[in-house]
Image (cartoon, rainbow, N blue to C red):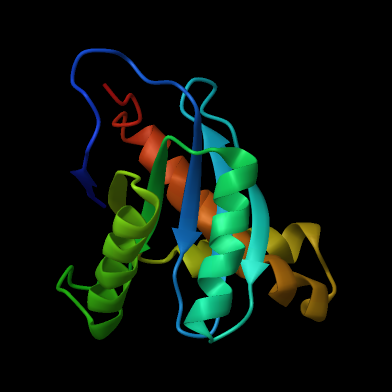
Length: 156
């Protein structure tokens, strides 16, 4: 799993703060929040609308609440690591967020995060309908944890 970082940030001072993570999908977007100092993260919300205008209103609200210094977006690669149709859509989504909200972003390989999230939720949440409601949020959290584990979470 790799991380590609696109930074608009100054190289002169260390920036510490909240980071929003997105598990992008055409039907739903999972969102998690974390902090690059504590490296803690938790599931936040599932954006459950296919309408882009509504999606961006919700994202704008979340950005207003959490004031992130950076965003992380899962990059859905094929099993062999090659770019998929969804990879291109996720990159487009990342660039839209960067331009609309003036935030730097990192793309994180998200292969198998939904499967991992499902495994975690099977242990903690027995009710399938409740699991499904938070699955994308937990996948976004796993993407963010992967970002922190790679040690590229210190923005300068």
